[in-house]
Every structure is written in C-alpha cells, then in structure tokens.
Length: 379
Image 1 (tube, one colour):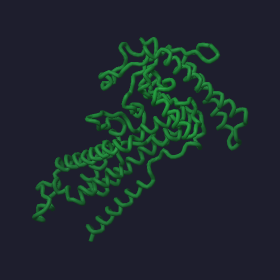
Image 2 (cartoon, one colour; image 1 turned 90 degrees about the vertical axis):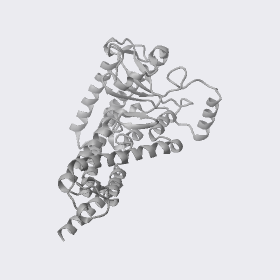
Image 3 (cartoon, one colour; image 1 turned 90 degrees about the horizontal axis):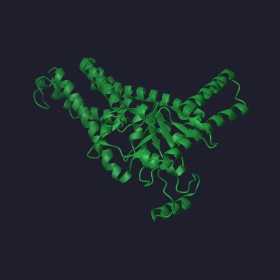
Image 4 (spheres, helix red, strand yellow; image 1 turned 180 degrees about the vertical axis):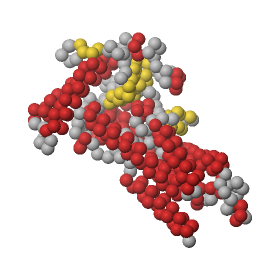
C-alpha cells in the first residue's frame, strides 16, 4: 500500500507531455500562432503572415490554447472513466482488499482517512475466497465493513479536537497528538543514531525498537478509529455545501469535544494533500484548483516568456515541460522521504513515484525542432 501511495504522490490529472506536444501541434503544426500577429491571418499574403506578434493577442492565444488542451484531456478522462474507472479509486479498493487503512494528516488537526477493511478482515486471502466473501456480502450476509453503520462510504475528511484522548489496548488513556509527537521524537533519535553509525548497519535491537515504535503508532491510530466507529452516529456527518469555501466546523477545532468525520462520497478528497491537488467538479468533470493548477500556471508563464521574448514555440514548450518535471520530481522526492518517515519503513522499499522517464522524449524532440529552426534562420 505504501508503494501504491508513493506512485501517486506526484500524479496529476493531465499528462504534461501530452499537453505541450498538443500545444506544439496546434500553434506550429496548424499555424494557430499566426492568429496572434498584428494582422491575424492563417493563410494568404506573406507580408501579412510575417507581421510582428501582438503581445496581447500572443498572450491570449497561448492561454486559450493551453486551457483548450487541458479541457480536452479532462473530458477524455471523464469519458474514459465510465469504462476504465479512476486510478485513485483503484487505490481505495486496494486498501480494502489489503485490509489496510490510511490516515493522511496535512494539518495538526485536519486530515483525511481511508477506511480499508477487507470483507474477511484478512489481507492475505486468495482470489477465490475473496470473491466468495464479496458475493455473500452482496447478498447481505455478514457484518458491515464501513466506518459508519450504513457502510456506504470509505473516504472521509476529518477534524480532530486538540485535547483528543484515546484508550489504548491495555486500558490506559493517552492524549492522541502528544503521544504521537513523543513516539516520533523517539524515532528521530533512533534515526540519528542510525546516521551516526554509518557505514555500520543498525543492530537487531535497534531495528526491534523501530518496529516497536511502528506498532505503537498503529495501535494509537487503531484506537482512534475504533472510538470513531463506536460513536459513528455523532462523529460521522454528511458533507455540506460550505466545504467549497474551506469552512471548518463552527467555532473551530478548539471547541470540538469529539472528532468530526465528513463523508467524501467522491472518494477523491484525500488527493488534495498530494500533487493531484483539490478539484472542483462541474458536470462530472473535475477541474484542478490546487497544486496541479499552480504548477500549470508556472509552466504557462515559462512558455509565454519564451514565446514573447525568444519567438520560439518549441523552446517555450520544452522549457515548460522541464519546469513541470523538475517541480514534480522534487515533490516526489520529498514526499517519498516523508512517507518513509511517517510509516517508519526503509526508503529502499519504496519504488517508483518519480515522473515518467519516457516523457523526457518530449524534451528531446522539442529541442531538436528548436535547433533546426535556429539553423534555418541562420541560413
């Protein structure tokens, strides 16, 4: 499950190489760029076609073409999702099959929860036994697997009270956040000792301590989840329309006496803490309004500056693509380290998660076109 999450840390709705290759095809291949000149023409007099670019039309044409390519991709994803499903919904299903729940905290008292509970309460069943249990569940045989009694939702947005306490398996109450901070403080000390020991490897006792810390965190989170399940009728609530404005519970988290879990029927709100970012659904099409949108604006600004002052669409698209890969690559690298730290596993077990290597072909092709254009201009 950690590897599945690691692969989605830097994933986005749209594909950057598709976006910028389409921009090249439309602006250069179909000569849309000529619509940005002082005398907008697509064919005709060479004198008119060789007119200088109007900076206002140039900016408007670049932005509108970019938005057009983004919208086309979002529509294709929406239509294809009817038959192929959503990749991030697949991750939620994988959590259920593996019997693993995921807690994502993006603020001290705010986060997202994916309730992954297998039909058999086991994550190591074969396909035949799993299919049998799912078939019985479809007939209403067996207990509900959901966090609330109706079991119709697996993903939630949560707000935790600052003074939240949980009851550990031994019967001892513990402050949720302060206990977690203490555990991770011990983890930091242990990791520091590992670093000071290099090139020697950690001892068996030290590795056992790390495993003990991991079990402690799992026990604390498990106690919190079971407390929520016991009070699901009061804790789990439907999401209201004010979620769009980012409105927190009335009075703020300081006034909460128990957690608040808001149902996320789309199953995608947990992605707002990743590079995927938050989105606004319009007629079933999710428009990016979070991190992905900001990265796209940075790419667009890079492209506009190159096209405006260098006059090359190929160079602009190549640099915009490189900006995308650098930002997402750094995001994936930092996210991978943070994921390994919070789950207390060795980063060597996390594979993937970086932007697609084959996408670099786009940069090579775009730069080749640019070099060819420069050489022809010099000739």
